[in-house]
Length: 117
Length: 107
Image (spheres, rainbow over the protein chains, first blue to last red):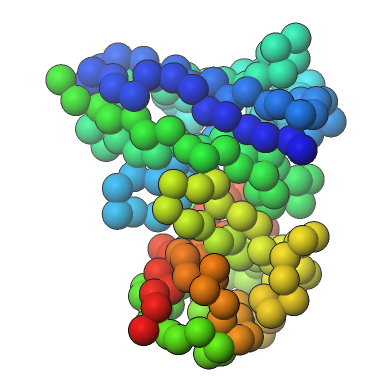
């Protein structure tokens, strides 16, 4: 069955750029929307952005100035870049398949990213 | 942004109990509401979409309903594997937003 796996550094320094990748296995990245979602410690989930396999995107306005989401169909992956990170960006980051109606019907297990000097 | 207010934040119950979790939207979201289950260290799992539609593979003891801007997740006859955190999510408008979560614990 289709599975998602997040990967990337678990630690980032303030002001650096955080880069995460989600690998889709057991199925194609085509014909789907894909999202990044995060959950800071003891806080609610926050949707960051989604991308369609063709490359069209939509971002949360609260993060839009710092975020880039991209897709690599040849590797069956999509990625997140978050610039100028601060401690407030410390969170578990999830990737998720997103239905056309906006539901997240398949998630990765998440990866903890800590921003600290 | 649409605010989703979820209650209670935690809940203790016993196997076999019926439990109810509620989310209230800050404005009309039609029925564009999903419920998810999350267990520690595991990927979240979509249970209910469109307020009351059961996701494929989800046991029928999970049920969702809606009344205006109030949405309810009911779990009939709790099973041991149901003790987890539950959260709601609105897909009505961007940015998508979530409730704060409800931790369901064994009494």
